[in-house]
Image (cartoon, rainbow, N blue to C red; front, side, top):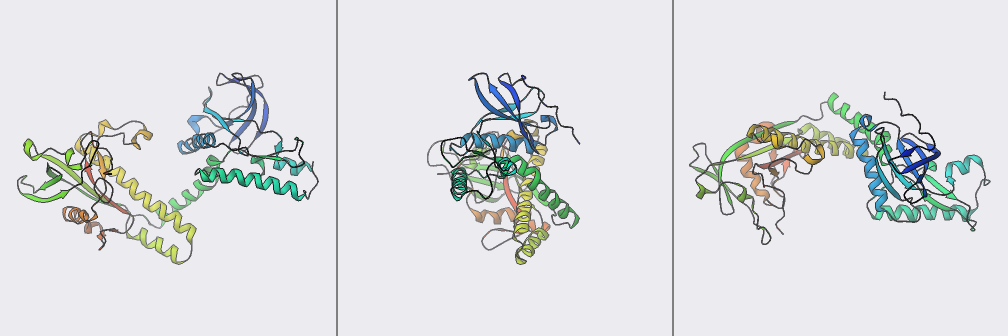
Length: 390
């Protein structure tokens, strides 16, 4: 287990800007310090994670940064504002917030500074302010993941007999670590133990050329036309069409197109249905999400395999975040999406790949069965990127 970082002494200057005054409190994720922002000579609260950046799970780090961005996007009197975030010289991530006056709800309750039960006016005002702050966050797509007495500040120092209430950090990182991650790990172990996910794939390369808005797929002799895909063209702008990313018939050059289909297997679909029928909706949603996203992950993995076989994988970004933003050459397009909206083209893909070999069928509505499956046409052209037709 990684040891926690040493406490920071008063007077220390952090990030070249924040002078530590004293410790305000600590929790499962880190320590909060009262600091002086030397740029504006005003007090701020700096939350520092216990561990160094190198020892933190990348997903946990990402959620910590997301929390900072989310808090910075909110503007409500009951929500403490995020002001800055980054990495300290000892590699520990930090988040800077405005200082909330008063003390935590837990502290008020433990010290009994106000005798219990509290007056109705106090309780009503506190709850009303908190709900108003949460409503503001929810309206902007931000959900608090760790609402508890230590994350609620109450200030009774004003002239009013009711407190001002403040919501502190959103707890997104701790929610992932303490709640989401254990569920995820248990689900992975169950899936392996009971073989609930059985990934399989079919794929292939075919000689091809373009003609206008059509992609012509040839037989192995590279002369006999086997089938055509007709794709829509943008009515304005760049007037893009998927066929544009292949060598034209007039060029005299033969190109190649790849198709693939991946699945997590019928057992995944059957198990999801079993959970739903037993009214086990939480486990159903967890497993359904895992199985569907696993199919997408498999599709990404096999797209990379195809890039390797085509000799273009060296162009892949070395940065994981860039890969998620198409940091590689070419793209994969699934039928039903804007650039290739005709779901009936799935029948042509089935003719080319014969997915029955991996127990995948096509419904009358041209949907893949089992549900935890996905297919795509893979285009290797360096300028092929996602686009819409509208």
